[in-house]
Length: 209
Figure 1 (cartoon, rainbow, N blue to C red):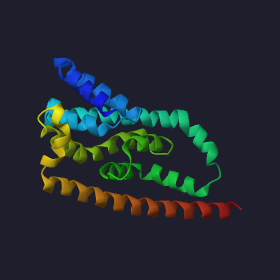
Figure 2: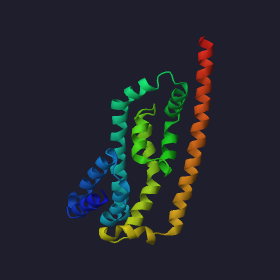
Figure 3: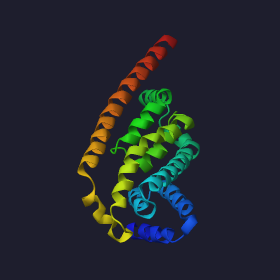
Figure 4: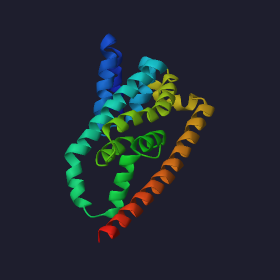
């Protein structure tokens, strides 16, 4: 699959003024169908440079993430809802994400632990609003810039794999540390608000009884 994506990037590189649109469309589709976005992100650095590459990756990733979110919400949510009907814990987490969606989305976008493509569909079955979900995509910016920059060091698509060895180690470690902090933060935060929501749900059910 990597070879196909590299060939696609080579083709896009020769499109001239249409290259940006073709790249963003490719990235959008890749996000929806679970193709490795890392190759396209690195390739953007070669084809477009750091600034434009980062912009095009962000737009393509956001469009793809939004499309996957909508598929998850309108095609999968009903099926999932039936499966977890009556599950108080999932309901509590779902409500928690709905209330604090923007913060959670931003933190998970900053963290490299959460799989990007799968997470897009997963958010679709929660109560997070589309607005918060899209705004939360801003959390992708630091990682996007880093990988586009690394890709730009390759100089050509043929040597793309060697770019990671040339990258500034300080920059790489900075992004990793930020990602680690975000991972810990989102884990603690979700656990805290989910526990609070669950306790409220239990208390409400007891009062109703």
